Length: 356
Image (tube, rainbow, N blue to C red; front, top):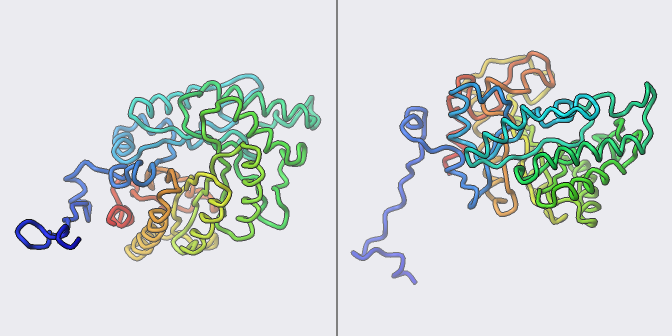
């Protein structure tokens, strides 16, 4: 056995040289990107949430092509964009992203079919009054069927229901969906999605999915859906920060959801430089850069340990020039949560993530 480890001349083989870039100068000399270092077959598909406007920018398009193996529509597949008025569908912006992805060999992930935000008021109204449960569910079925039929065969998976679980003591969020339909809207959404495109993977998606209490409620929903053959995966959003969650919290959550027999995705990853909502705006200092690199490094170390169970890691944005965290949870507070800076240059966190 030992002989197999020794070269023909009797010397032990030299350790493989690490040729991955360690800094921006070296990065600029190579063409490889995240999708090469994290090959989809060996690890997971690295993706990004994007807006169609990015396709009009040559530098952003080049970044997208170099680094990402999948695309999620950040906003243009949400109900308010796709069906702003009843029966009037606007597929143009989403079609543009899908066509770009397909032309460049990228997977497409659909986000999201049913959510309590970015959904038009008309969905819950009937001649000015609150619509009946039957009417709301029929509108839900019509929307999902039309959207998924339009994209059938072009979308790998869908976030069918987004953020239905309550953060407090209740099981479900007290949204208009829940007030009118109870939990039935969740099961109706998944049943309709399964019928509309049987080949598409169906996911439940939520934030704070590593929180122990919320985790157990999410697990209960996944188990109920799985028992009916309605769910294929769980999306942990991953809106985290430089202080947390801990490795143990992430691992415990991934292990728990695996017990439901579902595929796992980190669906909306960004790492805020502000651990607290009360933190004042800060410049992106070298100290913050280091803290963020350490956080990204340990998150990806956990992801790699679960590479056989995680099918995708999607960054919620490409670079710090466009991030929803600039206006949430604090309006106008500049954030720097992604792997590339405002000039699309890789940050210290990028080099930490690719060097393993």
